[in-house]
Structures are given as structure tokens and as C-alpha cells.
Amino acid sequence: MNTPEYHLYIAGEWMPGVSARPNVNPSDTSDVIGLYAQADAGLAHRAIAAAARARPAWAASTPQQRFDVLDAVGGELLARKEEIGRMLSREEGKTLPEGMGEVARAAMIFKFFAGEALRTPGDLLPSVRPNVGVEVFRQPVGTVGLITPWNFPIAIPAWKIAPALAYGNTVVFKPAELVPGSAWLLAEILSRTALPKGAFNLVMGAGSAVGQAFVDSPEVQAISFTGSVATGRRIIAGAAARGAKVQCEMGGKNPLVVLDDANLEQAVETAVQGSYFSTGQRCTASSKLIVAAGIHDRFVQAMRERMARLNVGHALRAGVDIGPVVDERQLAQNLSYLDIARREGAQAIIGGETLERDTVGYFQAPALVTGTEPGMRINREEVFGPVASVLRARDYDEALHLANDTEFGLASGICTTSLKYATHFRQHAQAGMVMVNLPTAGVDYHVPFGGTKASSYGPREQGRHAAEFYTTVKTAYIAS
Image 1: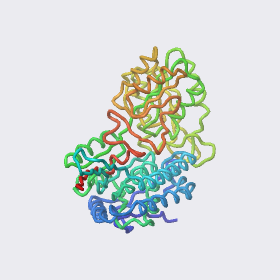
Image 2 (image 1 turned 135 degrees about the vertical axis):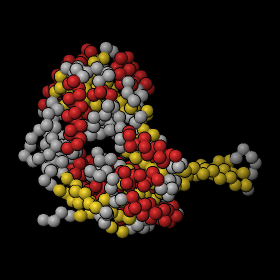
Image 3 (image 1 turned 180 degrees about the vertical axis):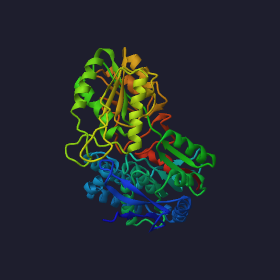
Image 4 (image 1 turned 90 degrees about the vertical axis):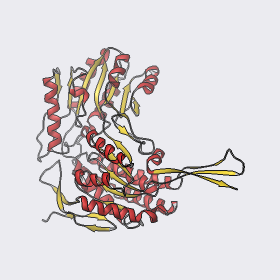
């Protein structure tokens, strides 16, 4: 049986790349989903030029035209939720219910921004001078380069592509190399809408070629990136140097505080959901659990018991709670951090071992590292796998200090029944998103997403705040 091949989408045409990369199922490495075309810098610049040519037509489109395109995409995603969710789970490794849920979320993002296309904000104001009116309105920023990660292969593309198109921009989209399948399906849906040729382009390939083309090209007015801190900082330096607009989401080391007064069962479920579901491969995952001394031992024991009941296996199998790690490299990184924790003096590691199943894949038992100290690397660096560490805190004040003791600031959570502590934590946690008695991983599509410190750069993503990045403000004065 021949392996199917999937092409790039540039200027309204499907075309081969300079090479092809296999898309391998991490639940079963014998399953090659397809061969996906890879672009080089030349093809990336060709796509950028196509988007630049399409800019005037799409910028001049009506709100109704933009609504129709985005609403149609959202409707088709919902109708094909199971099919596309299966592809997502097959290539990324999250369980099928999680994959289908992500596709549904992507659909609602498109539908939300379809509505936003009809209500782009603006103001009509009187001037301080007589007989003069002032109009403040938003216009598209231009051509945008979008670079997305592998952990949410359709939701994160949706929350970048949908607002970009809603506000009249043209798009060149580079998905993560590990997960081209979901991106290709989304591009195929967009290819059948009423978008002008070149208004949306799919260029799969290496960041060193495609991403760098975005950074270098004067025809790319804005870049939105989600990925590692190191890559994000290179994009910021390169794009900002030529005056391009930049938005980066770059990860986190998210704390979850558990106070003595917390509901133990609720706190354990909150920690397990936030730390281990989606195989812990979420930038908002609770990777640092800060537990007050009075509840610490009971919490750790309850976590051990709950983790023992988690079923790790093939992402498409019924009853599986946690799928595989995305690839061999990520699995090796997870295991390396556990070895480092042992060498640095962590007292115990619950789980963490690789697992054998009836298919060859990258399966790992969820890990809990206890008896850690604040300076250990397991508490400082983002692991990005089903690994969480535990820090013991004397009281709330120390717990808050430990929660904020990080270069990152994406999400922060607390489990407590105290309104006093919940209110104080919401105000003083140094993070862009704060959760009370909820997992740190899990956000709505209609409100802002983003962090502080090293986690984020530029305007927020999602919700109405997306207009801050995807538009530019113009002020017009009119004499009567």
C-alpha cells in the first residue's frame, strides 16, 4: 500500500515541496500517516509574495464576506469533528476524546471570530476643536506569518488564523514539523472557501528555512509564534529589528498551590488533570505542585493512589486516560529530567518509567517527584511531559513566594476553600492567567490567553483582545 502524499498550498494551488517528511503515529511507530511536503526558503518567499498580492482584495472585503468564510470553516470542523479528531490523536498522541474536543474548540474559535468580523471596534468622537469630528478605526496589519507548535495541532492554528483573516489580513502558515496532518486538513477546508487566491497559504517545513523567511521578509508585517523561549527570542530580535510586529507565547513553569484547607479529593483531581492529561504536553500544565505542610503527606499519598489508576496506552483506544509522548526525542528529555532530579537529591519518584504496550510507541507512566528543593532544575525548567514535582511550603506566604519564584508567568493555580487566600492569590500571582480550584491547563476560547515575564511577548491571543495584534489603529480628523 502506497503512503499518501500531501502538498503545500501556495497562491491557491497545491504544489510539491523540495522534499517530503513522514508523519509517524507515536502510539504505533509502524503507522506512517503520510508524507508531507517540505518547503525551503524559496517556496516560503513564494508564499509570502502570494499573500502580499492578495492583501488589497482581502483587506477590502466586507465584514459579511469574512463572516461567511470563517463561519463555514467552523461549521465544517464541527461536522467532521470525529474524523479530524482521529487524525489529530493519531499524529500527536492525545486521546481521542481530547482530540475531538480540540477540533470542536477550533471550530468555535472560527465561529467566534466570524462574529468578530462583524463588530471590529472603533470610535466616533467629537474633537476638542469646534466643527471637527474624529474617527478612530482599525485596519488590517498586512501579511502575517503564523508559526504553531505540535502540542495543539489544530486549536493553536485556529486561534491565530481565524483572527488574522477576520480582521482582513493575509496569512502564511507554518505548522510544527511533527504534526502536519491536522494543519493540512484545516488548509484543505480553507482552500474551498471564498478566500482570494493567496490570502491563505500553507508552507510546511523547517523553522530554519520557513520561519527565518518570515523574519527576513519585508513583506511580512507581523509574526505570531508559539513555541520555545530560545526560538521566540530569536524571532523577536530579528523581526523587531526591521520594525515588524511580533507576538510570542513561549511556555511556562506553572505552579499549583494546595493549601491546608483545600478539599483533598478536589485538589488531587485538579493536579492530576492539570499535570498529566494530554500527556502533560501543555504550556499551561501544572508542573510544580506547592503543597502546604499540613496537607502535604496526605496529598502525596492520594496522588500516588490516583496516578496508579491512570490508564496509559494507544491514543485511539477506548478507556485510555493518557496517550504516548509525542516522539522519541521528547521521551528522552522527560527521562533525562527525572535522572537529573535523582542526582540533585529528590527523595522519591513515583512512576516515570517507560511502558510496553501491544504496539511500539512512546509510552511513559506519569511521574511525581517528591522531596524537591526550589533550586532543583525540575522546579526551574519546563519539562513538557507527564512529570510534576512537589515542593513543601510552611504556609500561604511561602507558597505564594515559591509560586512566583520562576522566570515564567503563564498560568498559576491555587486549591483552597478560603476566600481570603483565593482573592489575594488572584491579585498577587505573577501570571497572565490564574485558576482557583481548577486545573491550570484549560482555558476558554473567547477570553484573552497569555502570560507575563518570559512566557509571553506582545499583545494577548484569543478573544476580543486579538484585535490588538492583528490590526493597526488609524485616527482620522474631519472638518465639517
